Image (cartoon, rainbow, N blue to C red; front, side):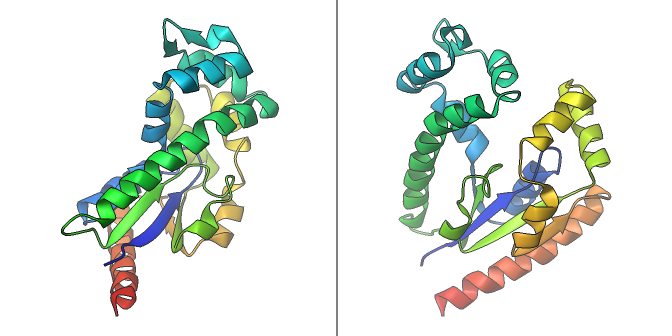
Length: 206
């Protein structure tokens, strides 16, 4: 059986990680690009490339200074592109290897979800069977991120502006999950989404 390969994305504060968790609880295998990106920045070769391309001050004692790196790239589109050009290929290779392992398992998952914040920005949508976009109003998203992260409202809005507009992503998606209410409402929407994904996976199996 070949699993259904689904992309999951949404801008900062949309609740994408919560939707990923809910899908995992329902049986999906989730590959988290952010988690893989953190692993990438533990690779000495990746760190050396970051130091060379963006400045040695970003790597201290063999570790990436994440706060300094964020400050460096979110205000500089060129620096952000150089960082992504270093990290994203590593992440794609790791995700592909993990997907191969899942597909070869005695009981492979019916659905593999690729949780990728910059899915559309990276042009990855055409490599997947379907794309889910999680949406929420900007005011709600800013409030969530400020509360959990300590970032200022201006910093959150700056990070959101560095991504493709959320409305544009939603217009291109196969599935849109609105996260503008309670957790119970979101769970009901994910239940409906899971039924639709399961039906797609079943159709593929013939």
